[in-house]
Length: 191
Length: 349
Image (tube, each protein chain N blue to C red):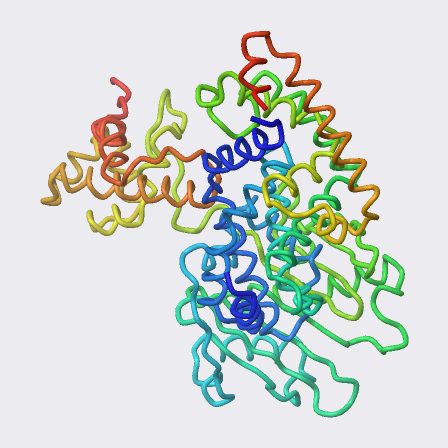
């Protein structure tokens, strides 16, 4: 996706061009939603975060650094909104409530469990068990293929911190996936 | 395979299975329209505020300003002052404003636009002076003034939010009273919103005894923004208790029979229909006496019900059933049949 083109779309969109909005939305929403899904566990919360992200998109266009790729800017928005969302303590309370009321229902990890049987399910579970900070780094690294340096810029934290979160995250994942029954271990460890 | 590669593959594979629910897209689209509307009416969008408005719009599906954005993205066309005065609703809105606030007659129409069949918007501003401004959005179907924004009516040095709660309330009260009347009928609740950038108050006016707000007011900086979000719960032509059991009104069929299109088909007023039914006739019999077939009656009622259901699903009020229109019509048919064949048992004397 051409950054220049996307920037123009955004500008048009901001001026009220609905066609531009649709083009921009269609080009981005799957990626944004998937990222949010990895970072936020509850359906309702994802919806709220999605909303905030898009709203932010047309209110903070002025902050777009045209020298950077569009996606970088977009992911910055996503990350910031997810973080802002986590910070809000009243939401935490709601999440708590929701966990209580939903715990009897289906799992929130958006995926039919049939498809994720076995190792994949293990990985999902293990990723879910990471702390939010570790998870963010892991998702940016492996889902969006950002380098650790880029991740540091994106999260606005020192590279050293990114590295330590990255390694701690991987460590935790290893540990969790290592807890698999022995016959699965082989499949994973075939370096 | 290394764990790194495993994780990467897993995430990409998993992402493939994640689809963004259309409800989210709809909601965002709605936000965008809302944003445009705010922008065009020359008012910067405050995020919290819009959040509030939309949250309410979602809660109350009848909120008139939520409806248009749900249907389609509509385009707004600018109007000249002459066009506003020629526009039926624009003229009515202006007259109402002039009689409520005579000083606005001297105001200049600085912007006006409409979306055909949805909304007419007019912005007036005082010539020179303190820049008093008032914005009216009227519903394009009913002509009701749905949204009023009154800006800069207080001296700059002392914006609204610097006033005491009591003063703010009396200002809001008088604005609503002048434009809509009957303020005594309403009770309100006031709260300050969590918004560090700007002090914002939200006031919900609801009919006494009702829990859903009728007017929602945002007071921010030097502006009061009133939204008419409620609707009359019992429009004059609604009749209750078409059937009766043991001499008491029975509401079971009301949802089906209170249908404008049905009344039109039978060429009957709701009151007349009720009287006919009270005599022990069924709707089918009433229809037959007017040369309307049973199937026609079923079709009309089923269509209204199915449309209502689909609209409800779109608004997110009811869970999506993903049924097609035809399937819904089929599903509702037996229920309709039961209603229209039902007869009130007449007292056996």
